[in-house]
Image (cartoon, rainbow, N blue to C red; front, side, top):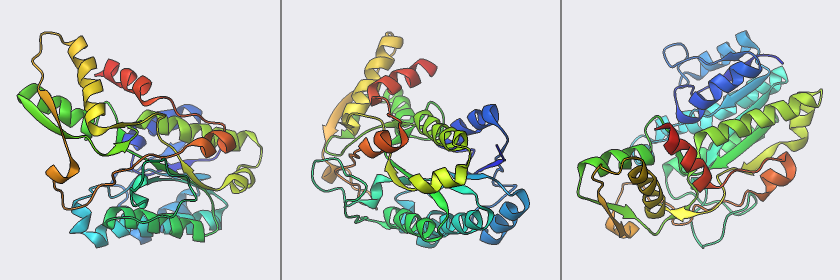
Length: 297
């Protein structure tokens, strides 16, 4: 297998992917000081020099609230970069594996979204990620777009680690209880990426196989909960692990009681049946993955 170019290796999904990719072949994972992804000319030059067989792009502008004040920066990384990756991949005959988000939807209703449902992002972050999906698809490169939700890990900056820290320090914590979705372990997304690469490579002609299955796939852990339910579950596991530690009391609140610059979707549920049917990959239950994460903390 030829070299894999991995962006965002210091992030949650990229950090899980880098060692996995090393175990199956060559991976090039430049940090920001080596390759500034907002410098699109530099990105083009790097791809033309490295000639990767796969480009895996978990890098993104992910600050949902900050994106409202910095739309240009959000669009550069979330919309323009995927288009450049696709253009260069198409020229090389490479495959792009890109990560997107449930924020491309309006978050309405109470049933899981399927890939063909109408999109309707509520803010700059979701709009920029949707523009990136369209830009990549328009290049004609063989590609996989994995939409996911509520990503967390044992390391990095995420909801789980933030709430665990606050729960040690405070008496009470107010957690939103009317937004529904599936917490998704970064390592499960990394495993999905590896599965996709290996499946295409085993077919003999990776680009041809990837082209056959190109498109958007919903990719989150199975099951659903709320942010409050997620916090309840991992604090219960934490309390069992550290019975002498004092933990904050959780108080459920409505979204309207926790105002943020950017609106959050009330419904982040994603139907992942296409992923299982076409790519033969089933995401684990969120509770099972959470137990594995908590065992690492």
